[in-house]
Length: 120
Image (cartoon, rainbow, N blue to C red; front, top):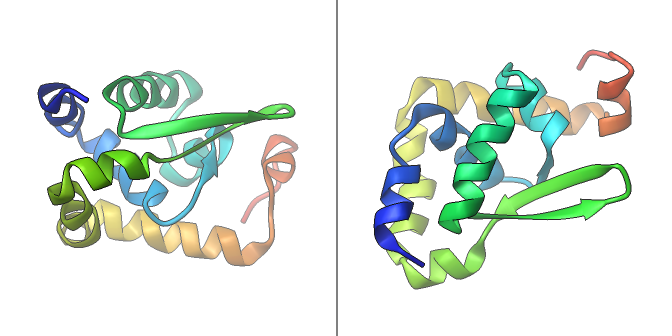
């Protein structure tokens, strides 16, 4: 992968927040939208940039697309693993996102629940 593209992808707060929650859990697009309180077009734009840089990968399952951190990139650029595990926790919004993620995961809700408008 191109280190310059990776660094460019890291240069946005929303993309950092997405990486932060994906570093803890694989998530569907609708879950990312809900947790981060962003609309679908904004989420798609940032997810495309992160995918193009190689930082994340995706897998389509039935109706949903799930995103996760690309572990191969973390192996290739070891500083990224340290960055994700220590530096993002220093950002207040990232800490808040992780709290929402824990609450969401413990609620037992799924993408289907989010689509019909249920709340965590």
